[in-house]
Image 1: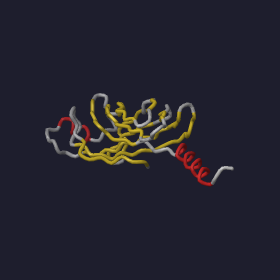
Image 2 (image 1 turned 180 degrees about the vertical axis):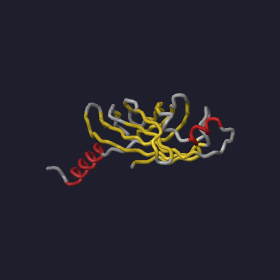
Image 3 (image 1 turned 90 degrees about the vertical axis):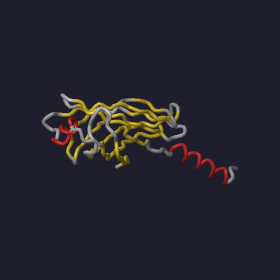
Image 4 (image 1 turned 30 degrees about the vertical axis):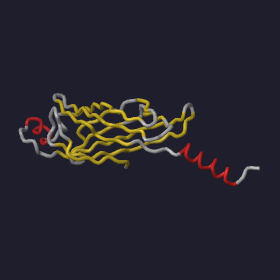
Length: 166
C-alpha cells in the first residue's frame, strides 16, 4: 500500500515535470540600414527551465513599431534551445521606405546623441517544450519589448527596455 507521503511526492514530481517556465527576452543591439530599410536586431533569449528543451517553430512573426505604427517585420529563427541556456539571435526585419516616419530617417543622419526614439518589438512565437523525446507542452506566446534608443546608427545605444509576456 502506498502511503500518503509517497503519493504526495509522486504528485509533486509530476507537477514539476509538467511545469514550464516561459523564456525571457532582452534586446542586445539594434542597427538600422537603408536602402531598403532594414533593422538588424540581436535578441538574447534565456531558457530558465532546468530539464526542458524549447523548440521555436516556423510559425512565428516579429514586428517593429514606432509610436504604435508598424515600420518593419520579419520571422523569428527556427531553433532548439537547451535547458538553462542563453542564446543571442539575429533577427532581420524588413521595412518600406514609404512607411518610415521622418524621425526614423533623420535619426540616421543626426549628430545629436540624445534624440530618444521609442520603439516596440512584438514577437508572436510557437513553442514546443520537451524533456528528452517526451513532448510536454505546445504553446503560443506573445512577447512585447518596449525600448528607447538614442538614435539609429552603427553603435546604437539602448537606453531603457522592458520585455515581458502580453
